[in-house]
Image (cartoon, rainbow, N blue to C red; front, side, top):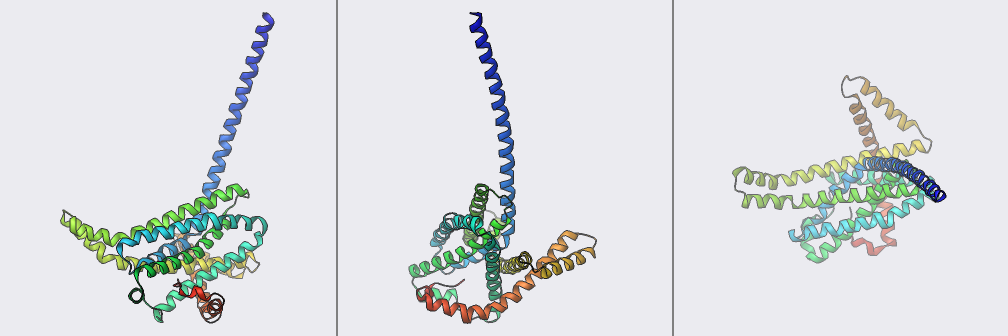
Length: 339
């Protein structure tokens, strides 16, 4: 009996030791998990911030696709585009980004620069069209097409534009990730994809219905202040949408120029980056307050100047060479409205 008790005592001691080790392992796992989680969230935050300019442009561009369509179709159209955006980012672009990073990492910078050129072109073209308008307006387009056909064209055009912007967002995000583990990178890209898409199309849905909300307030508001706020919303939305469009254009030029400058530095040409950095630091040193903000503002402004110069240079190249070539190769795509 004493031998059995001794054996049981040994078993209990071993179980206690095992429990202690399991507890230690659990604690270490929790610490590691927390550290990994914090790293993933930090990478996701950095990636989202890097892609901010493209996100602003995405939010600024999308509302135009519901202009001239019945109010009842606005939210369903936004949802169609958002659903396609989720698919583009999570099913197509996320695996493509991971494969690219694994097998062709040297291609990330050239692709980023290609996307930067696209942003510069789009931003410069928006400015060019303000002074040289030639495209059919949405009102004229709505008069010549039935609602169903118009909606189909608008959604197709929006999805095409979203795919291009989403590719740029995912590439920028991939370049901002500091974790080498592909699982962590996949999680970061998924967080960025879901978060940005929800943010953009949630904001777009709110924007396109804001005038309806204002009109409703003018009709059912019990207080004079409520009805006045509703009237202000209705009157202010055109100006708000114009402001958002301007901000989106500026953001495209700034981000596009910044991508080009950093890409050139990575490829070995340091002069543009170093020059902009030296100018920004010098200007910031000449003021006594908000030096960090001043340095950022000067850097962003100079990046924007580079962006608009590059974009204006690309306009004739795209319009006279790339677009006609694309039109000859894919004539069926010419019915899709451009960005």
